[in-house]
Amino acid sequence: MNQLTIYGVVIYIVILFILSAFFIKKALNSYEEYSLCGRKLTLLYIIFTYLGTWIGGGTIIGLSTSTYLSGVGQYWIIAVPYFTCFVFAILFLTRIRALNQISIGDMAALRYPAYNEIIRIPVSLGLIIRNVTMVGMQFSALSILITYAFGIDRNLSVLITFLVITAYTALSGLWGVVVTDIFQGTLQTLGLILLLFFTVKLSGGVEQIISFYQSNDQESFLNLMGGDQILNHIVLYFLSFGSFFLMSDQTDWERIYSAKNDKTAFWGYLIPLTITLILLLFPAYLGVFQRVLFNSEMDAEFAVYTFIMELLPSNLGILVLVSICAAIMSSADSYLLATGTIFSNDIVKRFLNQKANDKELIFWTRFFVIIAGAVGFAFALNIKDILYLWIIGIGIGASTLLPSYLAAWFSKRINTIGALSGMAAGGSYCFIWGLGFIPFTVDKIVYGSLMNAFVMILVSLFTKRPDEEDVQKTYFWSPKFRNLRKRLFTKRESVDRS
Image 1 (tube, rainbow, N blue to C red):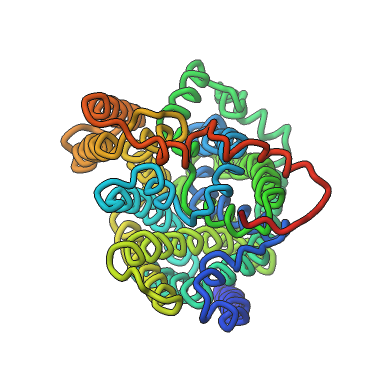
Image 2 (cartoon, rainbow, N blue to C red; image 1 turned 90 degrees about the horizontal axis):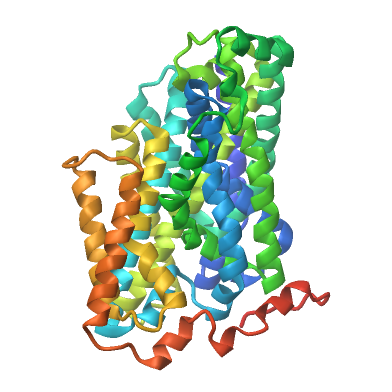
């Protein structure tokens, strides 16, 4: 299977570069085309690019590994953030479009403009850390696959992953990402279905799986709500890393602004969100079912790859292997591009070269795509626990950014110095547990967010009130946001770039 596998993967990579290269001319001279697809994406593009981003190979491998070891209840670690995304969409999505800003940093600068909009810097830093941990998560997953499939040294595998993904991502920007996501999203969905079907079949069927867990007194492994503390865990997941998705991240904000109108942005978000929650059940049950197949004796990290390489017929195995590659690449490219956009829009355009033209901004976006890939490369080399990487990135983002983000929507009293002070407090706490001075557990994310909020409120109360004009730019109940939802249910499909 090894030679056929090489051919399959090479053909797949060539297709990615061809699809990406097709849009080079469109994205060559316009920063809006490169980073936002000219703000004219239709519903189909939006749906598939979300699916490609949200269901990454790191998620598939990380979740199936976790459920292999601890049962299908581990589904909620990944699912809770996506349930939170429904709240994000209903409360904020149309308002975000009405702000007419590209990034989360843009919104922060609208609400907290003092000190020459310096708040863009900590916001950018927090989001970049979140993004590069996601990139590292995907790089790590793909490197394990390459190492197992081809017997290549893991460090070399990570390097190959870095070179391929950063190259085609930098090539044509969001157009390349979106178009390849349609191809890759289809592949990854097909691969998930095939993986689960043949795992059940080779495990002896559903009855055999149930019998295995009954005989081992582990029936809770099959129960989505299994475990005595599952509800407590779900609440903790929401309060810690789940709450981050009340803000979401730059990849989602890019797609919200890339949609041709509010209706496309809203339904193009909710439809794939619902599909994602269903599809996440596949890797969740995959790990539990493969535990039966390998009689609990296989290293959980390699269970999926062993199944693909050794138990599936060659042609089918190649297809499934490529589908895992697709899941990994379609997620990693989005976070790489988002990081490049943050750097060009919030750092270069605001602080380094305010007169930068479109070609210069595209250059800096591409440059930082490569830098972000290099940092993700370092993460993948040094941290092998995929889900740990995911939680760390979200935890830092939530502890440093979430309180000031929510205050921008709901508070008239929080000011710039308060927001900056809170970010410094939350960031310092993350630095302490990040260096290992205190052991990390998910509840530390909650403590960091609370510390941030406390300092932010305290400092704001003892300093000058923000200008009402700045408050109203993002205030949730501002008159500028009235009647936005009516656009979501109108029959007319007009282009809305307000």
